[in-house]
Length: 150
Image (cartoon, rainbow, N blue to C red; front, side, top):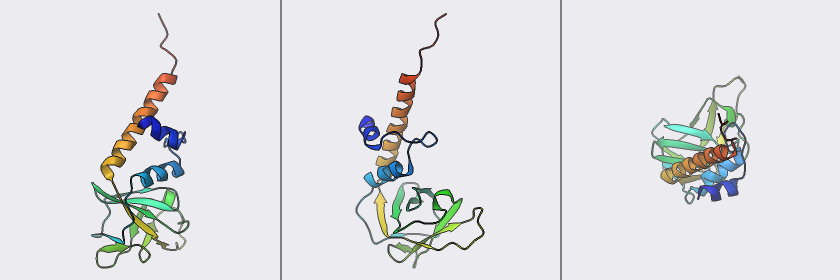
């Protein structure tokens, strides 16, 4: 399965192992059908930028959502922090926004509207990420020269 994922995703950049597009494809492959909203109790458990048009947000360690935006969200892929707007402890597609916080720019950033929300299968996503890491490690080991003989 890891080999199949590597074949689908191709070779990524050296720093992360996957390009933004490849990582987004991996998250999309582990996302369910779109939902209208999710519960948000004021604090994210974590988040992962997936380029500048999508991100994954964790509401609990085992609960996450893929949020896709209708266009580019300035500084999303390099932001130190984000938050999301909500209506009565729920975040709604088409109504709520991702807000980029902090960073080097002191300029005003436009809120980034959430276009679609898809629940992530966190366990399957983590398994796929682990398989990719193991496959990449095996590829590196296979490509390494044999140790020198005494």
